[in-house]
Amino acid sequence: MQLKIDLHSTSFDPLDVLAHWQTEQQQRGIAADAAESLFVGRVRDRASDGAALKALELEHYPGMTEQQLERLALECGKRHGVSNCLIQHRIGRVLPGEAIVLVAIGADRRGPAQRCCQELLEALKHEAPFWKREWHADGTSAWLTGNTPL
Amino acid sequence: MVSVVDMAGPWAPAIRILLFAGLREQAGWAEQHWPAAPEGDAALTPRQLWLNLKLPGDLDPRVRVAINQQFAGADTPLQPGDELAFLPPISGG
Image (tube, rainbow over all chains, first blue to last red; front, side):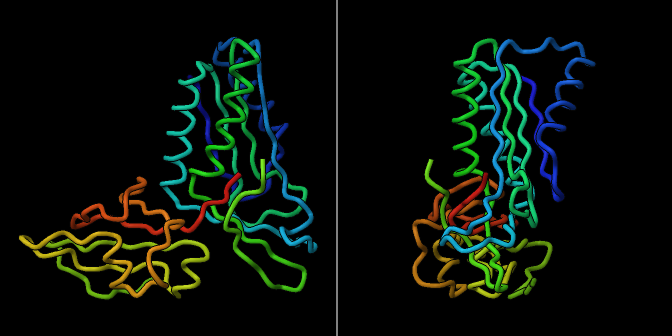
């Protein structure tokens, strides 16, 4: 399985990254997958308590986060027999509307591609060491202690 | 935010302890070093170090433990030179 993982400390355009990833594959002579599934997550403009959100801060554990993402992707990709996996994740201060995560999976069939994409997204939300802190307009902040419902 | 409780010499590498996110702010420090148990003594565990470092309350089951950047149990024996991290609830993606 081809695997590409990046952590971005500044904003990224998920569609540009996706186009670049596909161009790279073409240049390396890798045939386009028959099925691709992708997920883009963006920051909401509301905090978990409903108040206006100024920004979301994402902390990670350097080294372990990258290792965990790789391990989760390899395990999930193997389980579903997919051929390509791309994970892009923001760290640092992320503004409402900006992309926070992109997961793209290439496979021979839509079933494995879609199932792997969803499963890997859920795995990284719960098993890769990232922490979110909501910053409010009044300058206060709060660390989140869980994920939003599926 | 690095404080050193007691640096062991190079012949007995200390255990490096890391805190993250809300747990770091609650404790008021990000990193400390703690001497590993002397040879012949029972090895320290993350749960014992949590108490020794006076971290808040009992070790909450929602706080996960990583040793050398791999998830581990709270009662895993620690070796000299290990990197121990206490991880508050994860919220990625």
